[in-house]
Image (cartoon, rainbow, N blue to C red; front, side, top):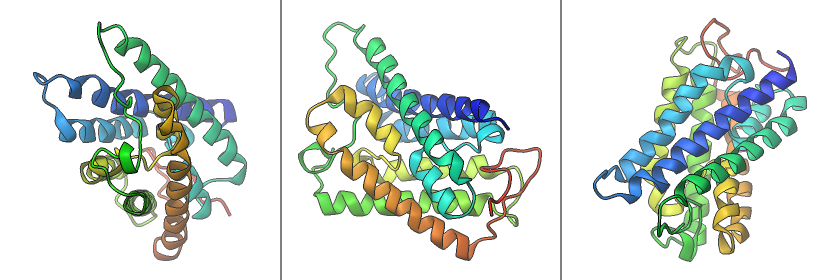
Length: 245
């Protein structure tokens, strides 16, 4: 698969994740008559990943997340030459998606950004959780997200169901951690909204890059040891076509 198609798949997949997930939080969740709440936002994030994994996962591997790309590289699932280009495409997509949401949201008279679905700790945490609590949450949530991806696409895993497992895992992650950090587990997803929220949110981005990457690396190490690291190669979606030696 040529690099331009891979990067296009990562761009559109990440765009959809940020636009759909953060859009649910910014638009639908702010209207009492809609009433989607945390559950609706969590489902929105899970559905964006589930749908795009099946739509373009066979092209790029369906990462849509710098932490996933990094973790899969550690696990031997992603070629080193793909890591930086994938991450750049993912971050650009997240910023473009956040910009599109900004344009839509500001079309409502009197609309206030109210954090713009950005992630934060301390005073910027939805539940005012401390920095150590938020760091631990992001580490564990990212670890298990990447761990599930590795396991769901292992040689012995049932073929064709990886997208469902991955989407439901992201939904569960949001159900647990929205009150803590507003849920990142994805540095690109954190970067796009933070640039529009500005100020303190940008200054806290360091946490939502370093901790997810550390959690993903740990999952890559454990997953490489515990799981069959060669993913199933079928006509259905996989996270990476072949193990990279």
